[in-house]
Image 1 (cartoon, rainbow over the protein chains, first blue to last red):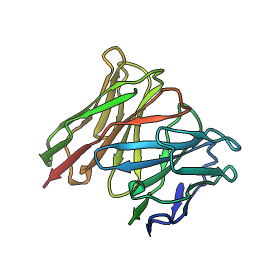
Image 2 (cartoon, each protein chain N blue to C red; image 1 turned 90 degrees about the vertical axis):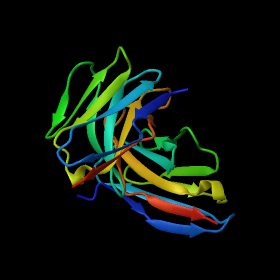
Image 3 (spheres, each protein chain N blue to C red; image 1 turned 180 degrees about the horizontal axis):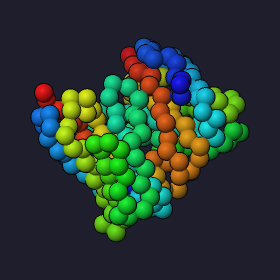
Length: 112
Length: 112
């Protein structure tokens, strides 16, 4: 019952470093999403992939890139980390629009 | 701008109490409203509501949607300490495929 698996669970970076957060799902879902969660802000959508081979910007895409590697995997890349990107990052997947999204356990990222 | 507002922001009760959590929304192209429970890690899915007036129920938890007044409530009866968590309301809609707009969450603390 793995569901959505995110790696790493924790990471500390220095300003300017790059990093890729990995996400994999084993539910054969078509759609995958990346969110960030900040205190008092709720979860906000960064990027999403409606289906394999497509990606689109969400609400807060600046400073991030994504890759939908295959149906199972969706990675999030920070090219040049900034302190404002300190957050908890969640990956989610769903069968598609109108279906509930299921979340991974999150990656806690601190940028000094 | 799509908006989801939850109230109260925090709530402290004793075991056995009944609680009602509120969620109001202003979202274009509404498709569904979802409730999640978040303990230490991943938000876990509770309910998805798409139609007004139809109660969804799971054990001691129940939820209902009013699409005319643009709100939903989540009821928890006979609360237990294991119900302590952050309860998140999210609405699917807007222009991005499958985008969820989240509220800030309600922190529920249940004391023995």
